[in-house]
Structure formats: C-alpha cells, structure tokens
Image (cartoon, rainbow, N blue to C red; front, side, top):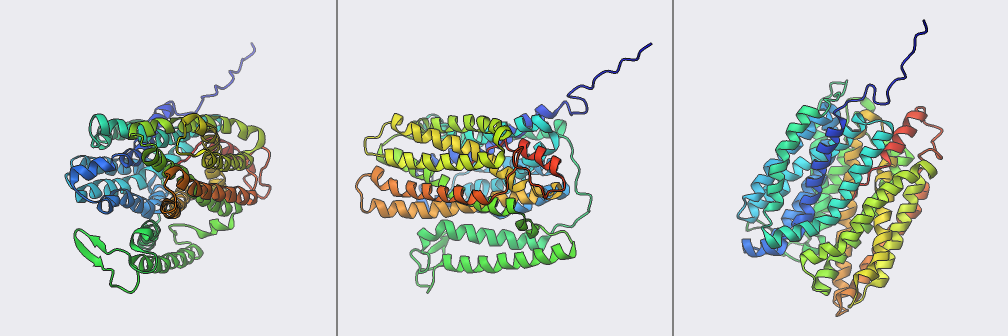
Length: 517
C-alpha cells in the first residue's frame, strides 16, 4: 500500500489568535493617534470652559509631546527586557487612567496631569510594543498585511482626527475624546491578556539602566521643551516670564532666556547619556541604547531622513489648518472634511507602496514617496489663494498623501532592518523620538515663518506659502539624503549582511506599515 503524505497547510504552526491580536493593536493605535489630533480642534472650547489662557492650555499639547519623547526609548527598552505584551498592557492601563482623569478635569492642572503626563507615559510604553508584537506574531506575507493595516489606521487617524474632534466638540463635548478611551481601553487590556502571545522576554536578565533612563528622559524633555517654546520665551533673551502654577520661575529680568538654559542643560545631559551608554556597551552591561547602531548605514541615514521628513510634514498639517480656519473662516468640522482626501490618499498609498516593494525594492519606494511628498507640498503652496477651492488642492493632497503612504513605513523598515531583534524595541523608540524632534523643530520654524509672513501679508493664504515651501525644500533634502540609504528589498539586498535571507524577508514585510505622527 502506498502511503500518501499530506501537504502541510499554509497556516500550520501559526497562532489562530493572531488576527484578534491585530484587531486589538489597531484599536490601541487608533485611540492613541486620535487623542492628540481630536484635542487640537477643541482648544478654543476648552479655553472658554476653563476661563484660562492659551499659554497655560498649550501645556496640555506640549506636555504630552514632552512626556512621550522623553520616555520613548525607555519604553521600547522595557519591552525588550520584559516582553512587549506586558508593556502593552501596562501602557494601556496608564493611558486609560490618564484619559479618565482628563475627562473629569475642571481645570488646566488636572487636564495636564491626565493628558500630558499619565497618557504620555502610557503611550510611550504602548506604541513601541505594538511593533514588537506584530513582528513576533505575523510572518511572511501575513506580516506584510498586518503592518500595512497598522500604517493605514495610523495615517487615517491623523487625517480624520480633526473631523472627529470637530464633530464631538460641536455636537457633544470635547470630554468625549477621553471618555471613548476610557470605554475602549478595558476591552483592549482584556483582549491582550486573552489573545496576545506572551512573547519571550530577554534571555539575559538585564537590569534597567536607571542612570541612563534619567539622563535620556531629562535630556530629551529639555531639548523638546527648548525647540517647542523658543518662540514663546525667546531663544536667547527672555521675551516672557516662565510661569508654573501661577509662580514665576524665570522672570524676564534674567540675562538669558529659560530656553537657552534648557538647551545647554540638555546638551550636557545627552552627552553624558552618550558617554554612559558607550561605556556600558563596551563592558557588555546592558545599555539602554546601543550607539553602535549608528555605524549601520541604514539606521544612520534613515534616521536623519526621518527627522527631515517629520519637519516637512508639519508644514502641511499645521499651516493648512491655519489657512482653512483663519483664512477661509471654515469651522473645525469643515476643516476636517477638507483634509479627508489627504487621509484617503495615505491609505491608498500605503497599499500601493506595499505592492511596489516587491517589484522595485523598499528603498526605491521610500525615495519615490519622499519625492511625491515634496512635489505635493510645492503644489499646495502654488495653489494657495484667498479664494481657494478644494478641487485646486486635490493634486497636492494626492501627491502628499501617496508620498506618506509610500515613504513612512518603508523608511521605518530600512532603519530597523539592521537592528538585532532583541534590541528592536529601544531602536524603535529612538526612531520615534527622532521623528518627534523633527516635528517639534518643524513647528518652531514653520510657526515663526508664518508669524513673520502674516506681519507683511494681509491674506493668510499668501502668508502661508513660504512656510509650506520651506516644508517642501526640507523634504526635497530628505529625498537627496535617502540616496545614501542602502538598498533593502528583493532588488537591493545588502550583501554584507550574514542573515541575508531573513533580513530581506522581514524587510519586505515591514515595508507595509505607514507611521504618520
């Protein structure tokens, strides 16, 4: 009798719960991405309700960025050591608690504690963990699908956030932006405990680098503070007193600005962090971040490109919102509706870009996306006029959104493709930190340019051209810099990599995500 051997199933050995895991992760990414964009359009309403000032309320938005940027590398490294699922759950708990406090707040202080501090801490643990969970749960083509969906949700959340925020603020209350989180987070935590794979913590029982954590957290906090607040408090000499809870910490009579002090202190702290991490790396005692990764061309040039890309993207989102609301006198809801096409092109671009990586390689898709994005910004700048119509902006929206869909995730892939798996969390945290620095620097430059132009132009649309063209020039620079990034993908494998096939497979799969902040 002839024994017939059954051909193994494609799904053999795969966790049947993996698609539920993906749904849980997408839910967490969605609420985290929506949170800040929804709140932006509610600022005028909160100002009236709390009877406060814009500088005081600005700490809600700025404080979230400061906390998030300060703790990202730490959060990613904790995921490397203790497991991504555990850090995801801890981050989700903090995010939910912060949302509850913010939803019940009746003043700026409690809103800052809930949104800026506790939610920022939760997001810094939760978001880096999502990438690690997807990488360990999905493989091959399924991983490509998972990362493409992750990126599409992130991009759509950023684009549709203003629309949702305007709807909630106009028809209900801005507090619903937080109440939704409070209702969703318990289900995400329960789903993570029931369906997510436990993962494998680091084999090396490493201690948390507390001195390094304190140095990077305080250094990044001061750096992002200085970049974000330079225009408000003065870059060199004081323009306004630095006040916390009604107490003047740094008066205008001081010889230098608080921003200058922040930059100097940040430089000292970050240099100390670098020296400490290099010493730990040489001794093999578990550094928080391995600076030897900068010796890898993909990580080094990819990270610099990402920073420039983030600076350019700010010009689109920040300036165009001002043009539509102040120049065209559109409501928050109508402004969100005008921005919907860019979100749709982001989603479409992420899917098309993932398919193209199989034909031309990941790095070439990145370069094409960067070029599209720069051309899109240029098109928008040229089209701006006092009587602008939506159809005149659509070509720029199409190029800009498709460019983000092409470049965003594939660039993350190139950056992380050389990094060992047991260090991917910290590297991902560093990657997102650099993006946030670029965004903060972009906001500082773009807002200054816009203020200067408004002093010389009566029409907001005319004043907005230069800041958007600045973004275009920066992204053109990122396009040029991307030429130094090594080829990653089926047509550009790095021959010096000893794990060539594994890296190529993971690179193609990772190329599907789109990270837009």
